[in-house]
Length: 558
Image (tube, rainbow, N blue to C red; front, side, top):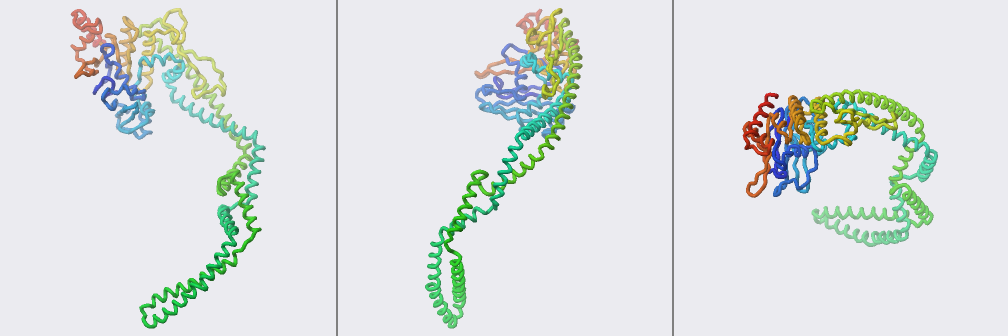
């Protein structure tokens, strides 16, 4: 049940808080006063579009927040909240903040959530029935959803859709394998050639780096030899001899003053180290020599690696990774027959199971369509359309696997005729505004008995009706409010008089700014508002008396 609605800086509303109770609450007021603000606010919470122009002039953002309680009995809602870690002990708070530029943030129980999730939560809490819903009723593409909801086929349909998705994924894999099988010989030869070419090269991961370094040495052999000999000569004939003289003098000093012994030790160590390095340099020079044959072989090997990199990868490591992948693909090609056989059999099994499930779903829908048609017929009779005819027609569809969709085979369409002797036809072809309003009310009444939604909102469901039809609609809305919370935006005094709570929506000017406000009316004020709705003025005694009688009769009827 919707317990409280808060709105800030939305359109002409600066700040508004409305508390709701059980039963029927109506909103009345002059045209243009903003009676549909409740429907608009709930629509925004469910993810509806919010143009930046809806933010009140001078404000940086608009906020809509709704508090729902007594939601513990809604199992689908409980599962949805639990899956998102949003439980709050039987209470749900949904909030939307609309910022500049139309950007919005949605919150459920204080947690930031995507707009889609907020919409799913609202769908489990509120059922909307307004002009938009009437237009949806004219769309045959929506009729299957109505039928399945009224027939409690939602879980069956979702399970079927999940199986259908698995089957389509498997069928796609089978198709890919069959295409691969048709190209297998060509692909296998191509893979074998690539694998053989890579393997013939006998690559090692660090080979390119070693070859590049070796080629640099071979190309620079003469320079290395010259520089090495010069360095060796400087060590042996220059630094070595001078360091030897330094060492001799330090030895004499150490005999005279032991404090210089540490200096002697360091110089002696350097003397021996230089000797070792001179020996290493001499040994290195023996290995360095120009070798045109080796240089050519090294360059040829690097050219081969460059060609392989152009064909198979940016580096030797990438080529080796590709080799592994090609080898695995070739092995998979060799086993494609077995894999295709297994998947083909599984696809056929799933297709047969889906056809059986679709047939069962179709049978359940056809049976439910007859029951629902009778139920709607009864509701229409109670709504003053006793001579109307309502039916559900199914289009002919081939019952093949190729014709399956995620919803099965069925394409139902709602048919209607308000006049005796006239055949039922598609809604869009014949239903008037008033007839469509009552038909929507009839369907919503049936759906309300099936779902767990606690709150139903009607936005001018009385459009296009009056007289006895208005009385019938009022009685039906009052009956629905016995087991649901119902909010109704109305122009009809017959409906307004049935309310448990009556709100008046009007506009006033304060400090040069227009404000929309919502007032809860007591009984005297209700009588005055009903009188205004009856003849446009609340001052005529006979109108006031009739309004008083209407309110008294409606309350007794409740």
